[in-house]
Length: 299
Image 1 (cartoon, rainbow, N blue to C red):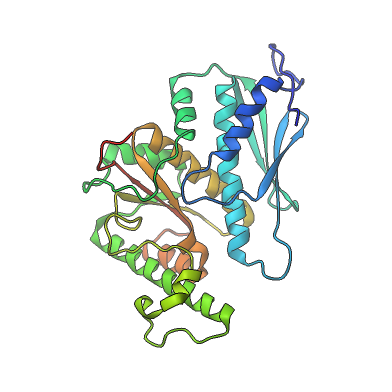
Image 2 (image 1 turned 30 degrees about the vertical axis):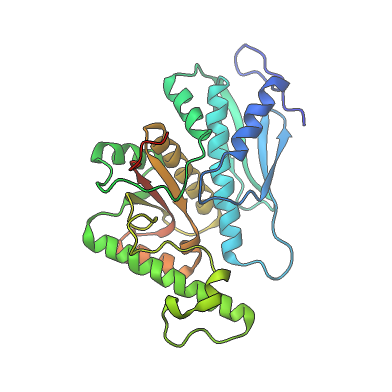
Protein backbone atom coordinates (compact mmCIF):
# COMPACT_ATOMS: atom_id res chain seq x y z
CA UNK A 1 0.00 0.00 0.00
CA UNK A 2 1.31 3.45 -0.91
CA UNK A 3 0.52 6.22 1.54
CA UNK A 4 1.30 9.79 0.52
CA UNK A 5 4.19 12.03 -0.42
CA UNK A 6 4.87 14.94 1.93
CA UNK A 7 6.33 18.32 0.99
CA UNK A 8 7.89 20.76 3.39
CA UNK A 9 5.81 23.91 3.12
CA UNK A 10 2.55 25.01 4.81
CA UNK A 11 -0.47 22.69 4.74
CA UNK A 12 0.72 20.50 1.88
CA UNK A 13 -1.75 18.37 -0.01
CA UNK A 14 0.74 15.88 -1.40
CA UNK A 15 0.98 12.26 -0.21
CA UNK A 16 3.31 10.87 2.44
CA UNK A 17 6.67 9.34 1.46
CA UNK A 18 6.82 5.56 1.39
CA UNK A 19 9.52 5.72 4.07
CA UNK A 20 6.85 6.77 6.60
CA UNK A 21 4.48 3.93 5.79
CA UNK A 22 6.05 1.36 8.19
CA UNK A 23 5.74 3.75 11.16
CA UNK A 24 2.04 4.35 10.48
CA UNK A 25 1.25 0.69 9.92
CA UNK A 26 3.24 -0.32 13.02
CA UNK A 27 1.24 2.13 15.14
CA UNK A 28 -1.93 0.27 14.15
CA UNK A 29 -0.50 -3.02 15.41
CA UNK A 30 0.52 -1.68 18.80
CA UNK A 31 -2.56 -2.12 20.93
CA UNK A 32 -2.16 -2.65 24.69
CA UNK A 33 -2.92 -5.82 26.67
CA UNK A 34 -6.66 -6.27 27.09
CA UNK A 35 -7.51 -4.89 23.62
CA UNK A 36 -6.78 -7.85 21.40
CA UNK A 37 -9.31 -7.20 18.66
CA UNK A 38 -8.13 -5.65 15.37
CA UNK A 39 -11.35 -5.67 13.36
CA UNK A 40 -10.43 -2.94 10.89
CA UNK A 41 -8.08 -2.21 8.03
CA UNK A 42 -6.23 1.02 7.11
CA UNK A 43 -6.89 2.69 3.78
CA UNK A 44 -5.43 5.77 2.10
CA UNK A 45 -7.83 8.55 1.22
CA UNK A 46 -6.00 11.63 0.01
CA UNK A 47 -3.70 12.69 2.84
CA UNK A 48 -5.71 10.82 5.47
CA UNK A 49 -5.58 7.35 6.99
CA UNK A 50 -9.05 5.81 7.20
CA UNK A 51 -9.79 2.94 9.57
CA UNK A 52 -12.53 0.86 7.96
CA UNK A 53 -14.39 -1.44 10.28
CA UNK A 54 -14.95 -5.14 9.56
CA UNK A 55 -18.37 -6.05 10.90
CA UNK A 56 -19.09 -9.65 11.82
CA UNK A 57 -21.36 -11.55 9.46
CA UNK A 58 -24.35 -13.60 10.47
CA UNK A 59 -26.90 -13.53 13.29
CA UNK A 60 -24.47 -14.54 16.05
CA UNK A 61 -22.98 -11.07 16.34
CA UNK A 62 -23.72 -9.53 19.75
CA UNK A 63 -23.61 -6.03 21.12
CA UNK A 64 -20.28 -6.69 22.86
CA UNK A 65 -18.64 -7.59 19.54
CA UNK A 66 -19.58 -4.21 18.10
CA UNK A 67 -18.37 -2.50 21.28
CA UNK A 68 -15.02 -4.29 21.12
CA UNK A 69 -14.57 -3.26 17.48
CA UNK A 70 -15.24 0.38 18.25
CA UNK A 71 -13.04 0.48 21.35
CA UNK A 72 -10.24 -1.09 19.33
CA UNK A 73 -10.67 1.36 16.45
CA UNK A 74 -10.60 4.27 18.86
CA UNK A 75 -7.35 3.02 20.40
CA UNK A 76 -5.80 2.58 16.95
CA UNK A 77 -6.75 6.14 15.95
CA UNK A 78 -5.03 7.46 19.08
CA UNK A 79 -1.89 5.54 18.12
CA UNK A 80 -1.96 7.02 14.63
CA UNK A 81 -2.01 10.52 16.10
CA UNK A 82 1.09 9.70 18.16
CA UNK A 83 2.87 8.30 15.10
CA UNK A 84 2.03 11.36 13.02
CA UNK A 85 3.39 13.71 15.66
CA UNK A 86 6.67 11.81 15.66
CA UNK A 87 6.72 12.15 11.86
CA UNK A 88 6.30 15.91 12.19
CA UNK A 89 2.56 16.52 11.98
CA UNK A 90 -0.30 17.48 14.22
CA UNK A 91 -3.47 15.63 13.24
CA UNK A 92 -7.24 15.72 13.46
CA UNK A 93 -9.43 12.68 14.13
CA UNK A 94 -12.91 12.53 12.64
CA UNK A 95 -15.23 9.80 13.87
CA UNK A 96 -17.79 8.17 11.59
CA UNK A 97 -20.16 6.39 13.91
CA UNK A 98 -23.07 6.50 11.46
CA UNK A 99 -21.20 5.36 8.34
CA UNK A 100 -21.19 1.61 7.78
CA UNK A 101 -17.75 -0.04 7.83
CA UNK A 102 -15.87 3.20 8.57
CA UNK A 103 -14.81 4.13 12.09
CA UNK A 104 -12.25 6.95 11.98
CA UNK A 105 -10.25 9.21 9.70
CA UNK A 106 -6.93 10.63 10.92
CA UNK A 107 -5.67 13.58 8.87
CA UNK A 108 -2.38 15.49 9.26
CA UNK A 109 -3.08 19.20 9.59
CA UNK A 110 -0.10 21.38 10.56
CA UNK A 111 3.64 20.86 10.83
CA UNK A 112 4.84 19.90 14.29
CA UNK A 113 8.36 19.67 15.71
CA UNK A 114 8.54 16.45 17.77
CA UNK A 115 9.62 16.98 21.37
CA UNK A 116 10.81 14.62 24.09
CA UNK A 117 7.25 13.83 25.19
CA UNK A 118 6.38 12.77 21.63
CA UNK A 119 9.39 10.47 21.55
CA UNK A 120 8.52 9.00 24.95
CA UNK A 121 4.94 8.32 23.89
CA UNK A 122 6.18 6.64 20.72
CA UNK A 123 8.49 4.43 22.78
CA UNK A 124 5.61 3.61 25.12
CA UNK A 125 3.57 2.52 22.11
CA UNK A 126 6.32 0.01 21.23
CA UNK A 127 6.24 -1.76 24.58
CA UNK A 128 4.69 -5.17 25.20
CA UNK A 129 4.09 -5.26 28.96
CA UNK A 130 2.95 -8.39 30.73
CA UNK A 131 -0.72 -7.93 31.61
CA UNK A 132 -0.34 -10.42 34.50
CA UNK A 133 2.66 -8.62 36.01
CA UNK A 134 2.56 -8.23 39.79
CA UNK A 135 2.18 -4.64 40.91
CA UNK A 136 3.55 -3.09 44.07
CA UNK A 137 1.16 -2.84 47.00
CA UNK A 138 1.02 0.97 47.41
CA UNK A 139 -1.39 2.73 45.03
CA UNK A 140 -0.08 5.01 42.31
CA UNK A 141 0.92 8.39 43.81
CA UNK A 142 -1.66 11.13 43.34
CA UNK A 143 0.40 13.33 40.96
CA UNK A 144 0.99 10.39 38.60
CA UNK A 145 -2.65 9.34 38.80
CA UNK A 146 -3.69 12.85 37.81
CA UNK A 147 -1.35 12.76 34.81
CA UNK A 148 -2.93 9.52 33.63
CA UNK A 149 -6.49 10.70 34.27
CA UNK A 150 -5.86 13.99 32.47
CA UNK A 151 -4.63 12.09 29.41
CA UNK A 152 -7.99 10.26 29.29
CA UNK A 153 -10.04 13.45 29.58
CA UNK A 154 -12.91 14.52 31.78
CA UNK A 155 -14.92 11.30 31.55
CA UNK A 156 -12.48 9.19 33.58
CA UNK A 157 -12.38 8.61 37.35
CA UNK A 158 -10.19 6.61 39.70
CA UNK A 159 -11.67 3.94 41.95
CA UNK A 160 -10.76 5.10 45.44
CA UNK A 161 -11.45 3.91 48.97
CA UNK A 162 -12.59 0.58 50.35
CA UNK A 163 -16.26 1.15 49.47
CA UNK A 164 -15.59 1.81 45.77
CA UNK A 165 -13.19 -1.13 45.56
CA UNK A 166 -15.91 -3.35 47.01
CA UNK A 167 -18.30 -2.03 44.32
CA UNK A 168 -15.73 -2.96 41.68
CA UNK A 169 -15.25 -6.44 43.17
CA UNK A 170 -19.00 -7.11 43.15
CA UNK A 171 -19.31 -5.90 39.56
CA UNK A 172 -16.53 -8.21 38.41
CA UNK A 173 -18.09 -11.15 40.22
CA UNK A 174 -21.38 -10.37 38.51
CA UNK A 175 -19.58 -10.25 35.15
CA UNK A 176 -18.21 -13.73 35.79
CA UNK A 177 -21.66 -15.08 36.50
CA UNK A 178 -23.17 -13.32 33.48
CA UNK A 179 -20.50 -14.99 31.34
CA UNK A 180 -21.30 -18.42 32.77
CA UNK A 181 -25.03 -17.96 32.11
CA UNK A 182 -24.28 -16.87 28.55
CA UNK A 183 -22.13 -19.96 27.97
CA UNK A 184 -24.86 -22.18 29.41
CA UNK A 185 -27.37 -20.60 27.04
CA UNK A 186 -25.13 -21.34 24.06
CA UNK A 187 -24.95 -24.99 25.08
CA UNK A 188 -28.69 -25.08 25.90
CA UNK A 189 -28.02 -26.37 29.42
CA UNK A 190 -29.05 -24.88 32.78
CA UNK A 191 -26.44 -22.85 34.67
CA UNK A 192 -25.25 -24.08 38.09
CA UNK A 193 -28.03 -23.76 40.66
CA UNK A 194 -25.73 -22.53 43.39
CA UNK A 195 -24.99 -19.28 41.58
CA UNK A 196 -21.30 -19.73 42.44
CA UNK A 197 -18.56 -19.45 39.83
CA UNK A 198 -16.63 -22.20 41.58
CA UNK A 199 -19.42 -24.63 40.69
CA UNK A 200 -19.58 -23.67 37.02
CA UNK A 201 -17.09 -26.38 36.02
CA UNK A 202 -16.29 -26.58 32.28
CA UNK A 203 -18.57 -23.61 31.53
CA UNK A 204 -15.85 -21.28 32.78
CA UNK A 205 -13.63 -22.35 29.88
CA UNK A 206 -16.11 -20.76 27.46
CA UNK A 207 -16.36 -17.44 29.30
CA UNK A 208 -14.25 -14.30 28.96
CA UNK A 209 -11.27 -14.15 31.29
CA UNK A 210 -12.61 -12.34 34.36
CA UNK A 211 -10.14 -10.98 36.96
CA UNK A 212 -10.56 -12.45 40.43
CA UNK A 213 -11.35 -9.52 42.75
CA UNK A 214 -10.05 -11.49 45.73
CA UNK A 215 -6.55 -11.73 44.23
CA UNK A 216 -4.64 -8.42 44.66
CA UNK A 217 -2.23 -9.40 41.89
CA UNK A 218 -5.01 -9.49 39.32
CA UNK A 219 -6.63 -6.62 37.51
CA UNK A 220 -9.40 -5.78 39.94
CA UNK A 221 -7.42 -4.70 42.97
CA UNK A 222 -3.74 -4.69 41.95
CA UNK A 223 -2.49 -1.14 41.58
CA UNK A 224 -5.05 1.58 40.84
CA UNK A 225 -8.11 1.28 38.57
CA UNK A 226 -9.32 4.02 36.22
CA UNK A 227 -12.88 3.86 34.87
CA UNK A 228 -13.33 5.39 31.40
CA UNK A 229 -16.90 6.45 30.72
CA UNK A 230 -19.11 8.64 28.57
CA UNK A 231 -22.38 10.46 29.08
CA UNK A 232 -24.32 8.12 26.76
CA UNK A 233 -23.63 4.73 25.16
CA UNK A 234 -23.67 5.29 21.40
CA UNK A 235 -21.22 4.12 18.73
CA UNK A 236 -19.48 7.50 18.70
CA UNK A 237 -19.04 7.38 22.48
CA UNK A 238 -17.48 3.92 22.27
CA UNK A 239 -14.97 5.08 19.65
CA UNK A 240 -13.99 8.07 21.75
CA UNK A 241 -13.74 5.94 24.90
CA UNK A 242 -11.28 3.63 23.15
CA UNK A 243 -9.16 6.62 22.13
CA UNK A 244 -9.30 8.13 25.63
CA UNK A 245 -8.26 4.86 27.26
CA UNK A 246 -5.37 4.44 24.83
CA UNK A 247 -4.14 7.98 25.55
CA UNK A 248 -4.23 7.20 29.28
CA UNK A 249 -2.43 3.87 28.72
CA UNK A 250 0.32 5.55 26.72
CA UNK A 251 0.78 8.24 29.35
CA UNK A 252 0.97 5.63 32.14
CA UNK A 253 3.65 3.64 30.32
CA UNK A 254 5.50 6.84 29.38
CA UNK A 255 5.94 7.80 33.05
CA UNK A 256 7.18 4.33 34.01
CA UNK A 257 4.02 2.55 35.15
CA UNK A 258 2.46 -0.73 34.01
CA UNK A 259 -1.04 -0.51 32.56
CA UNK A 260 -3.61 -2.96 31.22
CA UNK A 261 -7.02 -2.34 29.67
CA UNK A 262 -9.90 -4.47 30.93
CA UNK A 263 -12.89 -4.60 28.60
CA UNK A 264 -14.44 -8.05 28.86
CA UNK A 265 -16.30 -7.71 32.19
CA UNK A 266 -17.98 -4.55 30.89
CA UNK A 267 -19.41 -6.35 27.86
CA UNK A 268 -22.50 -7.05 29.94
CA UNK A 269 -25.05 -4.20 30.21
CA UNK A 270 -25.93 -5.08 33.80
CA UNK A 271 -22.28 -4.75 34.85
CA UNK A 272 -21.89 -1.40 33.10
CA UNK A 273 -25.08 -0.11 34.70
CA UNK A 274 -24.10 -1.34 38.17
CA UNK A 275 -20.69 0.31 38.01
CA UNK A 276 -22.09 3.59 36.73
CA UNK A 277 -24.79 3.71 39.41
CA UNK A 278 -22.66 2.60 42.36
CA UNK A 279 -19.69 4.80 41.46
CA UNK A 280 -22.02 7.72 40.61
CA UNK A 281 -20.39 8.20 37.24
CA UNK A 282 -23.41 9.92 35.74
CA UNK A 283 -23.03 8.10 32.45
CA UNK A 284 -21.89 4.77 31.04
CA UNK A 285 -18.75 2.86 32.06
CA UNK A 286 -16.93 1.49 29.00
CA UNK A 287 -13.71 -0.08 30.27
CA UNK A 288 -11.22 -0.23 33.12
CA UNK A 289 -7.54 0.64 33.10
CA UNK A 290 -5.38 -1.10 35.67
CA UNK A 291 -2.33 1.03 36.48
CA UNK A 292 0.51 0.49 38.94
CA UNK A 293 4.20 0.39 39.59
CA UNK A 294 5.85 -2.99 38.90
CA UNK A 295 6.81 -4.93 42.00
CA UNK A 296 9.82 -6.49 40.25
CA UNK A 297 12.76 -4.73 38.55
CA UNK A 298 12.14 -6.03 35.04
CA UNK A 299 12.14 -3.33 32.32
